[in-house]
Length: 512
Image 1 (cartoon, rainbow, N blue to C red):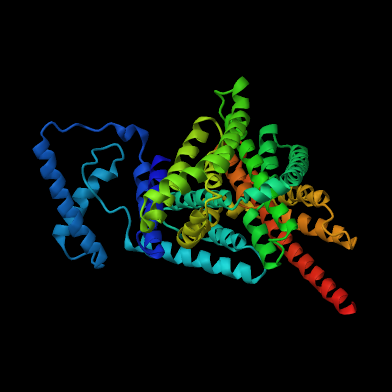
Image 2: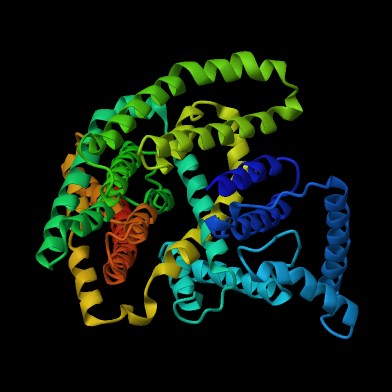
């Protein structure tokens, strides 16, 4: 985790120095190397000390020269015909064959075929996402299916799957920071109570329905809790994109739905923190209260910082003392440092770490230059890495070879019925027009369809339950199938409703 955070922070600062494309490539290589370094056994941390510093220095220089020759050999595509290079490769690689041996040697952790296959895999992810968007579906549907087919569970086409999955987690961290940045404090004050009611109703009903259905099919209480958590959040990115295409995002209804989805995610983060406590057999008693108490305290403290402290310090004290050309670097460095710090605090207080990334973005949501920097220099990297989250981090864990059985599909279809609780949030939408009663029905259907879609947090809940051994692979496959159903049904239904409303409005205006 420390390697991931350091690599992500360094790449976020580096994005301001070079072009985004080069930075993205550097981020991938840095995180892949961090994954390879972090994958060693814990027993390998004990290293032999070299008393003679000069001997160690000479050996290091010799290995560095050999590594450079091997790297040049790899870049030029030559693998044979040179006995000396082959001897050096075997000599340097012999230390890495034993994970607990002396790692004073160097070796190349990847080949040209690995790079080529990863490039083809990423192009396939991008193409499948675009194909899904052409079919009026969220891109995550195509990316998830592509990763399931090309991943290690079916074709094993993707090299270094562990490293690729870790890179996808960094994309989710950037997505949560972006969600915090998009919070409008003025809208939160204006529509906060109504959004809170919509979020509570839209979380409690799916939770109760999913928990009851999971228990009815024979799952344990802990496994049913994971299924219920997956049914609570709303895919804020999918709902925002569809409402923006329907020209309702900037309306009071759109802002209300957006705020409700944000509150949904916060409630889901709190429950994910509770899930980590439940999965630890050494914890109990008062420990179950820690995720709730720490989340409330962090939300209150960071909310106060976002309103009163951070904007005043940054805009009045810090930026005037920094040259204009360094503002982007300073703002992005501060945001990344706060994200890493708050994630560490959340982890140590038994709260889900992604809540810290969201709160970091919330702290800077009222500072206009941060939005400019994020939109123009970080957003593309965020989308690129988030594509790997759907296509690798989640897709690689789906038991695709055994998923298409009646048991898994039947349970997934049964879990999908919990989406009715999300649709019921339309009841909390008020009457925004006093001149025509049909607007009540319009707002109810629009809000219901916008909230009735699951996304990255739902998939993360199932993934976390699988990692913590709370649910098995079949239950995880059922959760993924239910999420895919919601991704197909929700956006299509919302698009149809918006098209129908525009058609009715045009006919009414023509009649007038």
